[in-house]
Length: 225
Image (cartoon, rainbow, N blue to C red):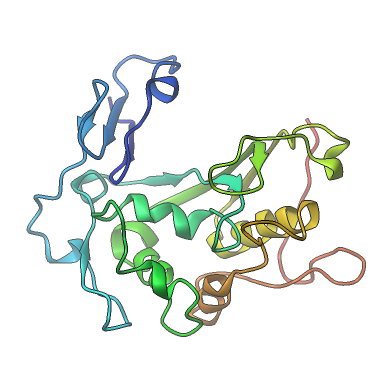
């Protein structure tokens, strides 16, 4: 009962919620559909607000689910998106009130005042994040694509989990893999201005691999199980 799974801007489908092994887990989504609880925005806590550095974007609220939580484990998926990777930073569009974010999307490529970085810096996200688990068991070329086999993984699924305390480094590694697999696509995975912005603001390490395909600053450890 102490485990809460949420997406405050979308509906959690039955295929996602029906397979859990432990009773008592609470699922929250945008409208409380499919037997899930509703992720509400009723708190009056002043820290609930995300105030954007770009003044063209109005303030948004953090869902009560996360305001009431003590610890956060973020689970982004390995897939490309217009931001390069649909990773940790993009994930938290599911933490604020939406569901369309038409006021945010035009500024996703701002190197200095990136809204995805502003959202992550909210105390209920940045200071409650205990672990990030990048789910790369499968992987997709763009946001609405069906997962497919990856040539860089021997024409198989990636079958990989990415574990990190550094949101920028984790997004960087996943984005590099997407760009290696699909250097050209409908949603080019090399568009990642928010990672440069996050790095400049001290939220983690962003770098590009050297000519030998290695990182110099990211402590990248591969474990085969």
